[in-house]
Image 1 (cartoon, rainbow, N blue to C red):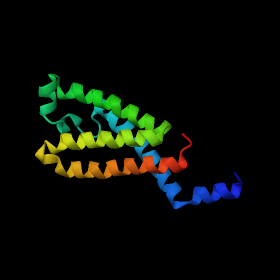
Image 2: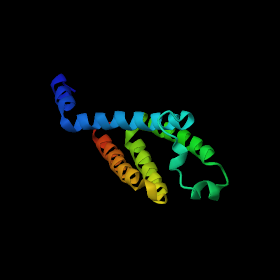
Image 3: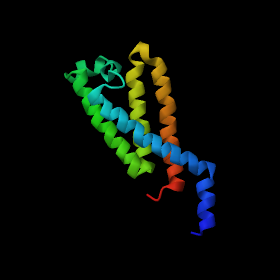
Length: 133
């Protein structure tokens, strides 16, 4: 590819949007996942519907530790294969939304996560154009 063509591609607004989303959906799940172990940002256990631990017979904290591992792996998947990782993160966020809708106090966070899911799906679509994998 000629240097001129590469410069046009890099300066393209859609390519820049792809890069922003790629970085965001790599870093955010990894940071949120790791924080499930440290609770530096928030006590994540409070965002879990009481239905989940009672149904599974485990504590909310144990469940959220598993969630943390999955989120770190999802962020790494986005880093390596954003075309598929974006779909995984988007669907994961839909699952989080379902969980939050069963807790009346968190409808605003469910709406925010819907916007994040749309961004993850947009990353997957942009990856079809800009990601070699």
